[in-house]
Length: 119
Image (tube, rainbow, N blue to C red; front, side, top):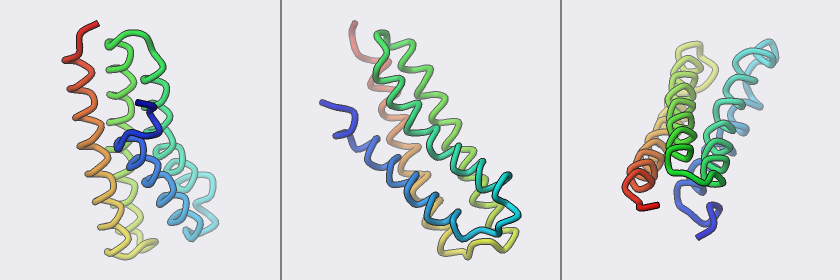
């Protein structure tokens, strides 16, 4: 199965799109700080997923999945920060948390599956 057909990819891509949508409305003075960091964190999730999938060993794939999980946790905090700073409302934060949680669970499941497969 191609990575783009997997639920983990679809959900992480949805999180990237949501993040770009939310960050376009953040204050312009956050352009080089929080906006940039949130976009980098979100794209890092999917980018690491794809890069890991292209590797030949499960050890390498697992490494990139760990990086994706870390980026997802980072992004979750950035949404909390945006809410606490008054940049987004509770509903937007909750939507982001939900997407982050779903993505994180799928990444963890994928990592477990990769670790259990025979090579």
